[in-house]
Image (cartoon, rainbow, N blue to C red; front, side, top):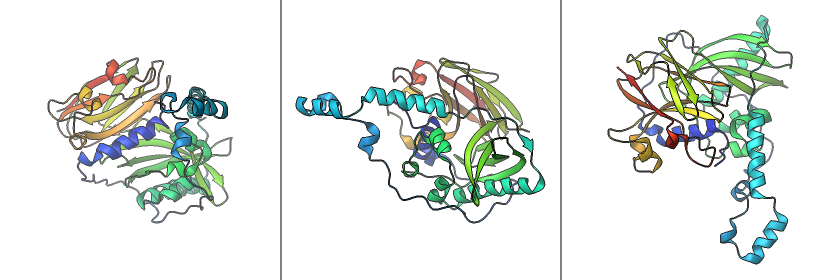
Length: 334
């Protein structure tokens, strides 16, 4: 399987099994107000890519010989297409951007307003507006697609709360950036620190890239090194209710992710993969991912006492989920 984007896959996982996560919100005294409406351009006319075009030609065994010969003559090789998609995703993975220069007051206000506008689109569930504020580079990096209408298929997001906005910067390539800390995107327990990069386009700032950052000021910092195929944890416990900053450097040769779950008593990851564990009994708390040589970041807050499972579902190479190769670990909140 070659996913559109591992972040997208994990988001779908969150939407699928996240219903088991309690919906209580976490109060933030320093939360920043955001714009109330989504200000976005209209998407150009278009429709989602037909599923058969995205999946490629049917398998040979399901096609009569004569028709198969015509398909082979008229359609690109499916394996070649898969290789091209994989290469495109690899090339589209954003590289760390230069630090940039601190912005003047007016530019800082502009960058902050751009971030607040993205948050507004999320919070009023304006999916079309949100996608219209993404550059083609962002769509490719995050979804593995270039057609914005493909990003709208089954697109859902949860409201977020902005904890802080600051450190606005300008960059030599003309982009603006701002650091944002926000909670709630995947679950009420998830807190993320990211640097958002924007490309000015007319009256709009379009989201072009984001970089994860370590969550500053956390009560507990945990390093979860991702190797082929295991997690090496700097510690395996944390106090209940603490804010936990997780850094997940990928020192292996393959893409890896760190998905945080809580399984029902007696359940195993093997059982989850086999479909033996009811989805409504699996609690999802957040995820991070990283290409080889890069680092993923995740913040978790307000976790209750219990055992939490860290797991990697990536299945490259050979279609075998890394969890089945041993990439599973347990973390205890006491």
